Length: 575
Image (cartoon, rainbow, N blue to C red; front, side, top):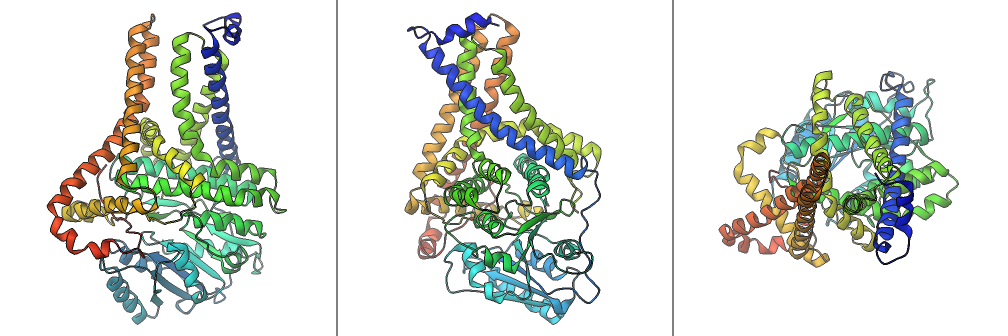
């Protein structure tokens, strides 16, 4: 470890130390940025722990709804070519415990003729109407605005003052409305007019499919268990997750309604409704099941949409949030760090590279090391609180203490895959900063795990559709060329880290120190190789599939080039 004197000599402006000076300054600035994001996360960790008494507090109690005084509730389910999941979701929605005459289930179906979704929806809705449930399929002449456009087009069909919104793969528990609706009421039965949204967390019925689904489930749980709970408890403001929530209809209207100038219309409406004076409630103890992506292409597409949309909302709404009388310093602070959180991805990769250079020069100091340790400590603490604070869903995944403890073994996987996604997250971030394109590409759905295992033809077809969607992005400045460039960038960075690892092992005078640096550099290298290698493999596999199915593709070229559709994938490419 160099002395304090040697540390300050780094800043001498002679030819031998200018590079060291620039490197150290850049390192400290970027690590400071990571520390700010870590501080924002630590605040939510503390808020979540305090508001739940370290996740031991009983469920949040609502008000009183007198028998036979239940309000009319509309359930809207948005779908587009979701034949593998839509039937189970409609059945779950129509089975909730609520008076039949006060429950309206509406399936907002934008499906085309590519699959059998429309016929399934019509048949299932008819069967429930025979049982006395108001269940209907609603359509529109085009898909303008995608999901937000569908919600806007059918806004006048909402019955009652409350609307529950769920995606096509989101399964309700039978007591969902009985647990959530009381949050809109006081103990005396009067309405809490200021409550605009009640959100519940997610559970996942395909958590154990592969390592990618385990990783996705863990990362999403951090958002729900720590961040959403912390924001709700301290600020009464958080981003609607797009599904699994009940809105007061007036809060949607006074927030300006659903807009499609961004691909994250849910987050956009959340802040606009809060600025209109509404507060939000988060119920952490009733997670509802949905599906997480099981393949790398679907995972990458989902993360791209979220990251891009966050930055689009940041560009268009941050000034309104900062100048609104309904937002205080903490809401402004949280909004900025929440929507710009993807910044940590490129910063982390650059910090690792600079760390290698500084360590090689022998100018690493304790303050530099401690600044990195703080970030790592906050990240691990949030994972620890998530693993043991998560309320298990009805699927029973990670319900016992020992299964939760074993889940901590996923931390290395989360680190590797998280770093591996850094290039794609960075690209999505700049896409959101520079692009006004709001083409909504929904996350592919597979349905049950049994379906996934039993239908290899469906897997190949879904993979083909995922890559077809990439091809169509050429019209919007994307496409296969962009995908290949990102693959090359990722694999090049991975090779760079491997080079750092080999050099550190060869030149280090202290064997233990060299081994430590070697292992540290292999972590991002492994992630980049796994993620970008998987994407490259999928692109090559698609080329083989395309040759094998050339006649079929030629006959369906008209449908594939329908510009009124976004060619959204519903894939099943195993990671």
